[in-house]
Length: 78
Length: 395
Image 1 (spheres, rainbow over the protein chains, first blue to last red):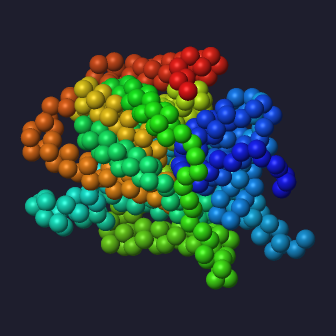
Image 2: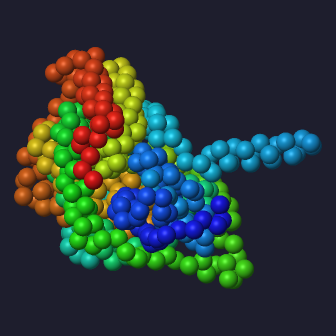
Image 3: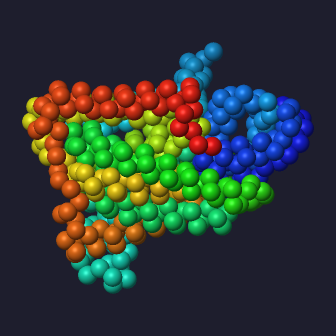
């Protein structure tokens, strides 16, 4: 879990619902299939929103890790 | 295992099941519905805007804009409920170690201001926010809840269009920053000690309510604790009316729609029981905003809540979580509602927002409940169908 290699990073820290999700959607569209997007966020709601959205869209939610005052989320594009 | 261990392990279990996971939205919907019945049985229906307007009235009175002295904020029923809600959600966020100052980038601050202005104006026209003009009126069998609901749907759609326009214009990049954990450098682990502060706030709220009781304001004390309960439920479920109205257009998700619908139906049955038996006056929360006040107010409020990222209730519990964007939105929301309400009052427009219609006068008691059930069921079914087909989804 600790060693996920990401291809791009989206900084969504300080943003509140629904901006982290909308920006993630935009950012992942720029990736190629199989690439991993790392999202940095501070909204506790993202813990439920991102996995739920990824599942609906068919992307693979790889998990999240706690960092110093923010959370790192990982999603692999379908 | 010693008896003492079994006891403390059980306490830990309870703590973890309450505060380490988000509660399901449907649980929240059911609890809010039940709380809405109990709070009316105790004193009055749940509302938000009256309280925050009282705070802004004090501000304007203080700087000399208003000449009339507002009611004492600590005896104003809606104000005390709001205090309970914010502190309850704050304590709940601390218990879950979810409190942090979240500093938004500049564009979000601007959105907080714009959203706040629109919410203030909209809630003034509709005579309430998503709670006081949609949820509580429907539960209280007031016809004004329906145009507000239609307005919120239209407003949420327009608001989401605005956000999508913003995303096109300002594509995602590295934005925002976060308060660093300075506390840890001082050797104090703030995050780990949050639950202790949360517990302290819960205890203080109970003591505070007890003080009200000892000063013969027992009813106000009860409202403080009801507000606390609303705050805890909202924060633990991240219960979000914005989501119910916006997400069908955004991700297609209809889960929050179902939760709001179930909540409203439960509440309306309970309130009908209280009102039919004569325990509560029929006219309670039958808001004179049918129909154009509710509709126009709903549209404006709906746009505002999507741009701000929080409605009446959602703004308050997010404030309690430390989201600074919503602090700004709340301040502007309260101020613009206070000014707009004063303007409507002095211009005589307040009486022209619509009429107060008690549904049972037209449809009978059972007819009214069936009507509410039917409308909310159709709303949910259409959006459930949309969840599968994405017909209304615009992103």
